[in-house]
Amino acid sequence: MIESQDDLRERVIARYRLGEGEELAFNQLSRTVAEVFGFPIALLTVLRRDRQMFQGVCGVSGTGTSRESAFCSHTVRKAEVMVVEDALLDPRFRDNDHVTGHPFIRFYAGAPVTIAGVAVGALCVIDHQPRNFSAEQRELLSHLADVAASLIETRLDSFVSERRERELKRQTDLLRVMLDNVDQGIAYFDDALKLTLWNERFFELHGFPDEMKRRGADAAEMLRISINWGLFGPEATEAWVPEMLEAIRNTPSSERTIATREGRLLHSVRIRLDDRQGFIVAVRDLTAERSASRAKDEFISTVSHELRTPLTAIRGALALLNSSIEGKVGDGEKLMLQMAEKNSLRLNRLIDDILDIERLSRGQTGYFMVPILMEDVVRDAVQQNQPFAHSLGVKLVGHARQTLPVSGDPGRLLQVLTNLIANAVRHSPEGAEVDVVAVMTERGVRVEVCDRGSGVPADFVDRLFERFSQAIDPNRRGHGGTGLGLAISRAIIEQHGGRIGYSPRDGGGSSFWIELPAA
Image 1 (cartoon, rainbow, N blue to C red):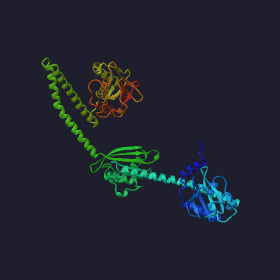
Image 2: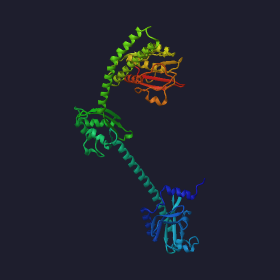
Image 3: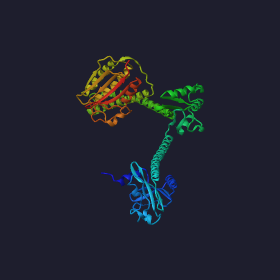
Image 4: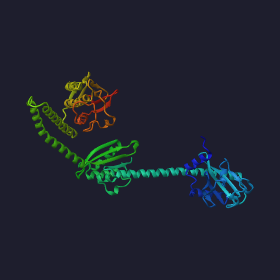
């Protein structure tokens, strides 16, 4: 559909926010035009669908006229200046209300004001007496109409800038609210190492004086205050400042834990932004967190140890009872005793896993790191788990035909593979095959445990290695795990400098893998 000239004009007028009433800048332009030509009236008009609006006014009052009586509606149809030397002699205008009545127009000269290729209105001069208008005057009025168009376009740029400034202020205010409501101390320094943005928590944690809460505060002075406050240890002196500034300028990031003189523990992270745009410092108070963590660890350790002693006695008693009642009780009673023994064994394993994961997370578990061959660990894991796989009708196959040297704790790595293999067997249908494949890659030694089970739900993948996380699988067989096996495995592999992960298999099933640095 072809757009009409009025529709096109309305779109341009709306874009440039015209036709909403006179403005100071355009009134000044109208006065200048009137003085240059020596006319009593000069107008900058905008032609709307049903009305001619005055954008700039000199010599008359009012906001505009009807479109039918507007000389401007004729001017916009022309590419050049329209001149009416005597309106009473022009059949188009002699009966016009503004000719026969106020403001008694007799002379009119108007130049179209063109924006984006569309004549949106006119710059005109008016007199109450008939006049002549020379070619030089026509050319000058046309040039002034171009000035008006440029002023309108510049005005749009100003509107855009104002809008951007308002939006920037809104975003800055929002950022300020966010910064002031986070528990971390955050500050941004520009590339000249001057403070630009911060929150109150940043000053509170560092003990900086209030007079430094200003844009342009110097990072060097802040470092001196921090050193004197004891944030960098008792051996730090102000002589360190130049070296510290050099490190800030030339290193992309840093991370350190700081003990203050007040006994607080702060974790500080500095990140340099790209393209030399400065850097961000984030500081977090770990004091309460570490205290709570210690209390939790002590509680778990105490409860687990207190549970283990009576549970060991219960397991022993149940085992003894089961071995001595053969033929003395009915099948129902015997089944209940066997279930009690199995559940006590499962509870004991849960306690062991809880203690294990807590020791691993605190780094309290020693590792016996020695040069080993990963193919030997894979072979041992497959052999030890064959009876369990056979009991569920699953075929367990190892594939490790290369020399795969690594440095690690063989017992801990065997624990990881046993956990991955047991999970794969439980989730495999009867008659399926679980493959344990070990190969050398560019990253190092990679071991994959692959099954043809139902796989891991997509919405659960991100939680696979979290503590006590277990996806619901109606096809799982065998007794359920504790939900700690994968978390323990991840902690062990990370202590070996490796990675652990999950990938879905084409055609269904899961592939859990570990990668270790080759020795």
